[in-house]
Image 1 (tube, rainbow, N blue to C red):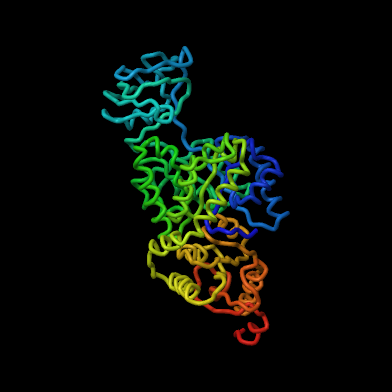
Image 2: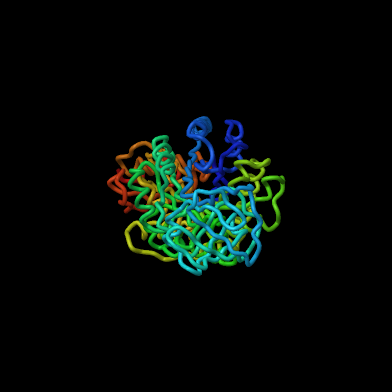
Length: 481
């Protein structure tokens, strides 16, 4: 299903979007990748949604990516004798390991690893940062705090600890069980929550055993600080602005978002911008002007994908939310300023032969009348490198691997076509020409660019660049075997 935009759309599935009809409508409206949130829903519900997506993929002849998002370690306070208490600024409040109901003076925080890492002066944020506590004194089983910002604290509210790297396992027991389940189910991407260090990603990759690509969610200050190391061992990144905006001053988030997107593009790894993009559309059929501007900004910055969370999972207008994102993307990408920004932010990188091939393909395509760049890719790397160039013409990723095609559904500007195993270069050129014509990218009188690697079906061998006619008779008359 050809899109009239390059940025991809990720839609989260949930109670509002669990039927075949609704998920199909979301895909037809513009969703390229579906997110399965492992924080909600049983394994049976997740498996049912996965099966529906694959059936829609088959029915429509589309390539659809599936992203499973692990919950990650959740830090929460215990319960209160009265259900809730009102904390006032300046009051003393204790967090401890005591197995007792909470009061106006204290509550259980059943996470000894937090106390092990705390130091006087550290801050604790409760209920998405609405309540702020500052640690005065602390020990292995307690933290005496002063209330910096008061409010209502109630049972099992979440806790953020922005000032320290917590000695927490990146994967809880639930995460490990969920990881094995979705990896066997056959998801394409696995998102890791609250990544703090590269080792978190390495651990998940060892458990995953190549069954899915690994995407790291950057939502903690520690993750921002260790970003270069995390990026190196990840296949993709999500700028998860929800918790990031809780643990950091909100004004810090936009420049972090811009910086992370640029680093991902330079590394040729897809990046998603997520959280509250069209939040008002949970209840309204129309977004706010500020939300539209937020979506547009992420596109102008060069993001590979933009994501809907509750808007499509639990909102009243899931299809309208996807349609809005799709329309904003089309409008932004038709703006000459968008092209100028993409070209001005391009980072020249000529380390490998493949780097040189894709850069040359983009330059030729933009200086001559080329209709599309057709790149043959086994692992997806050549398509990722081509997408990094942000060419003005469409990218058709030709691959014999359905797994590779589905993973590339998250990558900017790529339209994936499944092709059979190839042995001769002429056969590859013919297949590329047919794909360009069938997709409506070119006519028989047009030309395309073909990049490939010989020997075929070997990752990392991109070494050929060919300007080819879309007329098969000309290919057979002029191309070498």
